[in-house]
Amino acid sequence: MYNMNIQLFGFNLNVEMLILIGIIYLILVVHTIGGCCNMPRIMEGLKSMNSDDSSSSDSSSSDQMKKIAMLKKQSQNQ
Image 1 (cartoon, rainbow, N blue to C red):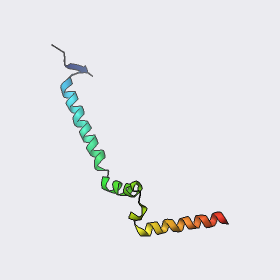
Image 2 (cartoon, rainbow, N blue to C red):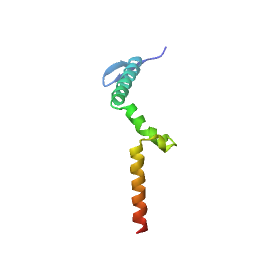
Image 3 (cartoon, one colour):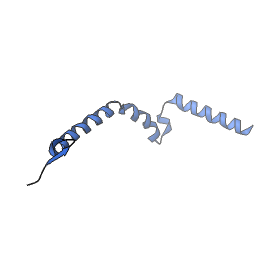
Image 4 (cartoon, rainbow, N blue to C red):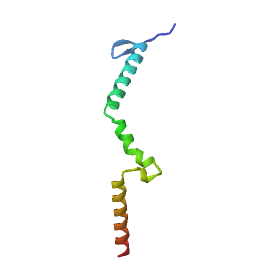
């Protein structure tokens, strides 16, 4: 019916097997790259960026932000 064999570098290769090898290769690559990513820590860092209420964040960090803002205002007034 159809010729599903490809001759590449002198080898006869079946197209179905090449597709299967490609899918397995992609699964391995995605698993390797995804294994290096720590998603819970990334989402933890983005949580404060997405929240509209700044009082829900850590109070010490908000105090530091207030101090920085006051220092900037003082330096602009001088």
